Image 1 (cartoon, rainbow, N blue to C red):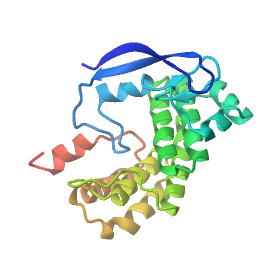
Image 2 (cartoon, rainbow, N blue to C red):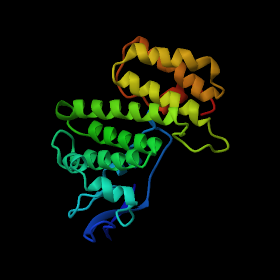
Image 3 (tube, rainbow, N blue to C red):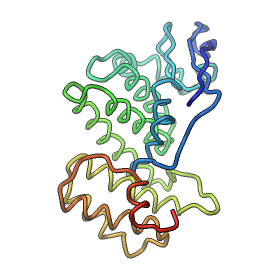
Length: 234
């Protein structure tokens, strides 16, 4: 199981003591979501690894550090309203605020990753209450992803042995569109890029994604379920 420990940090903006959670160990697996949500035990950390300063509402995974732009953003009315709105779960607000800081810093890819975390928090709550909040977070994530792509900002760092970032981004965007019920857009994205995909795993994921789109399936899908069925050596 994951091992967490309560701690605290001094807010870099106002000097207030901020309660934090230290992650000492994680029990993980390879059963991630197609929108890159980590496995179940690890995915629960999205509720713990971000903190909000009780003094100034600075939200960060490390409140002891802040950029000059973060100081400016936290002081705006937009940010302060975002941090307190009841239209989203409390922790989702933290991630949305953290995303806004990255957006103002011009790091659109990081802003997208943070906004997607807000969507995951909404997914974990009461769906009758938070379904629309999750939808809005996914819509914003897609906007941020598109801007990152236009500016040449990769969503993931290129690493040996991993699929190209651009191909992974296509898979993530397609899944977000499908989850939003935007089936026509999702189909167009997949079909327009499928022939250019070089990674076999990503190709299989996108081909299966087309099946989900054809069924107008908006439910979350797990990478393990796809690989278990399609890859004998998994």
